[in-house]
Length: 142
Image (cartoon, rainbow, N blue to C red; front, side, top):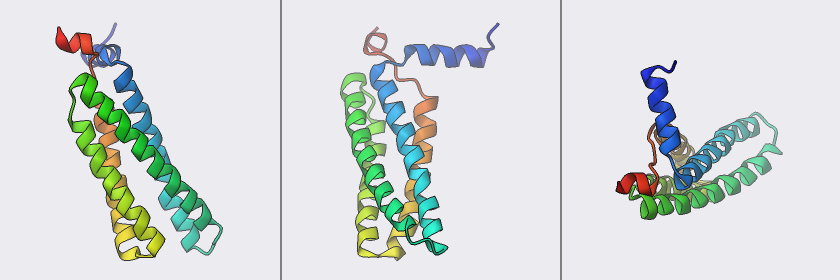
């Protein structure tokens, strides 16, 4: 016997279409990748200078995932008429891009606080995309 919350969760999962699941998968992967960045930076700051290379590779991965997520968010906007994921993702990607170049330039006064804000923003986005259903187009039009 399902509880009311369990039924609502199962219903939301059933109603979410491929575009929504793709966005969820990319946000989740993006979240895992960005969570490693402070770890690599922290290990580097303890004196393990090889970790800076891992931090740089992680920055490439995180930035690439951000752009893939933006493409998926645009698809969600076009197919499902959900605009907020595109706006939220564009803001995160813009912050990540500025942070990427600030890190390359050694502007730690900008790179570190922007990194904290980016991780926080992506965490909120991760929670939101998993809490809200992305109904299939036919369910939405009915």
